Length: 516
Image (cartoon, rainbow, N blue to C red; front, side):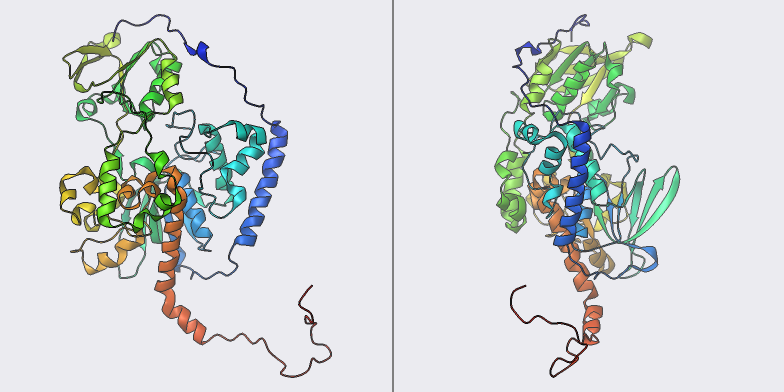
């Protein structure tokens, strides 16, 4: 990087005129959203089951604890409710905030989602809960027709509304530390967490781990960057004080969507220079996800053979995911932005002291550059051993490397080998107790992609994911409780005929024609 640029120039004068239609008046939008909420609740009533059937767990336990209160966790909780499964608790590590859900107002830094606006999603079977209905009520029909992708903070606002309307039972500021297996056969899991420095405990029949992009392991940071002082580097998932980067030289490692988005954020907050480096010879331009967005791939990938799933996962995993076109334009709008392809960081060290303290970075071409901060846009690693909440059970969870020889030396081999409803499966040599309780734990995070494809960790497949989880939980509850259900049926009496003879005075009216 060269010396600090003094007056970066914004190059967005090529933009055509913004012809988007105006949004509806805020007061009118509030009224429309109230009506939409009422419509959604009425649809839930009409389309919902009307018989409570799941036995109440003993001693205050929950039927299901969902770990993670973002879109996936909220969607899973709602899908469970559509089976009339009550006592579902959602645990969210983030703070209680009336205007925030998950990552979308925190470390997500894109301008829009990249998934199609008209996809099936967390509305499940309730049309008035769909993003389109919310957006039309919030901004107007013309506004919806004018967009191709939903803006990020509008998606966040929609999720806040969704959380309220679906009556999600969420405990905020609650970080799960470990899930302990049942102490006795058929017993409950103990979910230990911290809140405000104090330990809190939950008991659950089943647990859904819905922890977002890092739920399969954690952010991947190359060792050469991870060894640097924390105040001089960050992964894109972490909090970054962008205003503090004003006047600074920033290096972004990785040219995918998060790389360009974080570069854009730094530039918009006054960074003196931003350099993005990527190991590939050119920026990816083809998005394989668009091909996957059809019902067979979204909802039936699990039905494929293991051979087909593995071959697809390996091939797809080798395809680079591109940034969005707006993300690229956002960065290149600044003349103090630079992209270097076919470039990797091979060394990094801290030099100087005090106000002169900065980083000296070497690349694979033998070049040296100076910068003040590094942002690692290097994705996520799948490794269940990195997840503290799984520490007590991870050794008994079956991985793809347990079932395929070639998976033992491939990164995808660390993905869990899941069942049809995203449930963990036990290793072949797991003990009797673990073989019974492991399938009551569900993985709805990035590691699911090997078993469930796009339904495992992408918004465009989330409908299939949450409905599969709910279907499996409902089926397991049925099987688990069948002896009691059958005994109840045998003792059941519902007398409907009290008079085997002519209608008598004083008895209720009865229909005498096949129309109203």
